[in-house]
Image 1 (cartoon, rainbow, N blue to C red):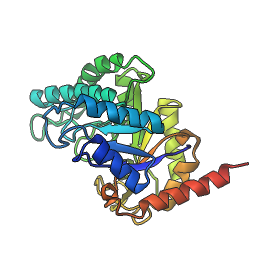
Image 2 (cartoon, one colour; image 1 turned 180 degrees about the horizontal axis):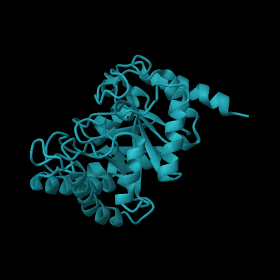
Image 3 (cartoon, helix red, strand yellow; image 1 turned 90 degrees about the vertical axis):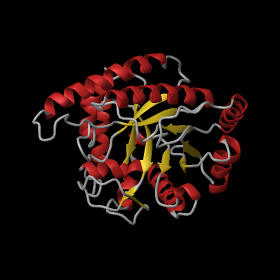
Image 4 (cartoon, rainbow, N blue to C red; image 1 turned 135 degrees about the vertical axis):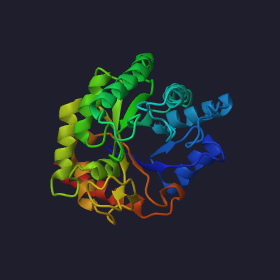
Amino acid sequence: MRNPIGTHVKVGKGLVKGALADTDRFGCETLQIFVGNPRGWALSAGKPDEDKAFRVELEQREMRAFVHAPYLVNLGSPTPATYEKSAASMAHNLRRAAEIGAAGVVMHTGSFVSPAAGADDGAARFAVAMGQVREALLPLLDTLDSEDAPWLLLEPTAGQGRSLCGVVDDLDAYLAALDFHPKAGICLDTCHVFAAGDPLDEPGGTTATLDRLVAIGGEGRLRLIHANDSKDVRGANLDRHEQIGLGHIGETAFAELFAHPATEGVPFILETPGSAEGETPDFDTLRRLRAEAAARLTP
C-alpha cells in the first residue's frame, strides 16, 4: 500500500485489546502509541506475552506500528537531570519498540534555553545543545544495526521557544550532528513545520518543502507523516492541530503529499481533534485524497 492511513490510539486496555482493537474499529492500516506515560519519566516495563501477541499480529497483518516518545524528552536541555532522563527515556523507548515489533520511535527534536535570562548566548547554547543530542543519540543509533530494528524518527517542532529544529531546513544541522546516520529518519508533522514557517499553504509549497527535505536528508529518510491541519496561520509557532481541510494548511497540501515521490510507502498518522476516538471525518478525507492521487499517478 502506497500510504497506510491510521491514527494515534490509546493503550489503556492493552496493546492488543486496546490499541489494535481501536485500530480495527476505525478501519486503520497503521497506528501510533505511547508505551508509557507521555507526560512522565517513569519507564514502564512491558508484558512479554502481550508484547509477543502484538508483534505477531503486526507481522500477520503486515502492519507498521510506531511509538511516540514522551513529550518531556528534550536532549537539548541545559538542565542535567532533564538531559539524563531524556537520554534514558529514548533508550527505553527504542528497546520497547523492538520488543513489540514497532517500525520506529518518534522523538521531538527539542529546544535549548539560555541559562541566564537575557544573556546573548544563543549560538553558544545551540552548539552545546546539539553536542548533547549527538552524545545521547549516536550510541543509540549504533545499536540499531539490524534491518528490522526500529528507526529513530526526528520530528521537528513548531518553532516555539528556542527550538533546535522547526522548518525543514533546520534538519540539515540536526542530521549533521548525527553524521546523517542511516537509522536516523524523519517524521514530518505538517502542523509543526507549517507553524515554524514552511509554506504548505501555497500552491506547490508542500511539494517544494518535500523536495527540500529530500535534498537535505536523501531519499528514504522520510519514514512517517503526522497529518494535521493547523488552527493558526503559517509562522505562528503554535502547535494547535485542526481537522484536515478546516485549518490554514488546507486540503491541497495533503493532496501534494500523497502525490510526491518521497512519500511512496510512507504511513500517514492522524493527530487531529477526535482522531484517537475515531470521531473525525479525517479518515475519509485522507482516503479520498489518497485515491485521487493514485488515480492521477496511474498511467
